[in-house]
Image (cartoon, rainbow, N blue to C red; front, side, top):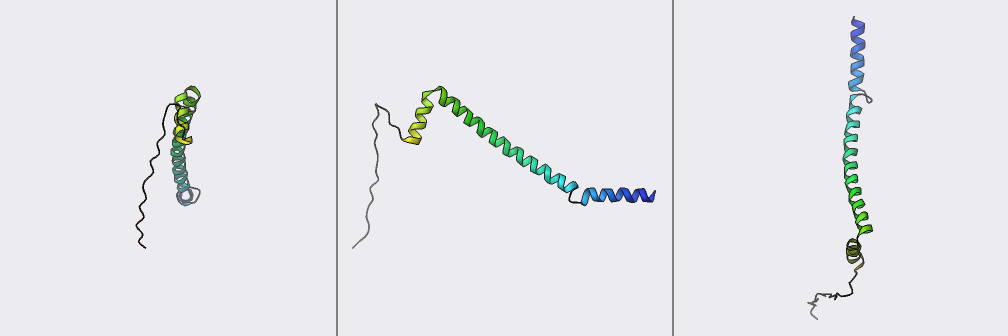
Length: 93
């Protein structure tokens, strides 16, 4: 009986205190949870990109908006005004 109890305690000690035991399981669970969070954020980003691709393929408004913001497009019946700030020179000779 004592030998079986010692063997059981030895196996429990290895389960709880070895590098391949319970601590490694906890680390793996934390890594899996972190990876799931990352996957969820990447999935949301992919869905937004998919929606943008569909919008660009189906409508001209999205393509026009993209051209305005990224390429500086100006429409045919629009006037472009550029406001340049006045730079004052305060250096005294």
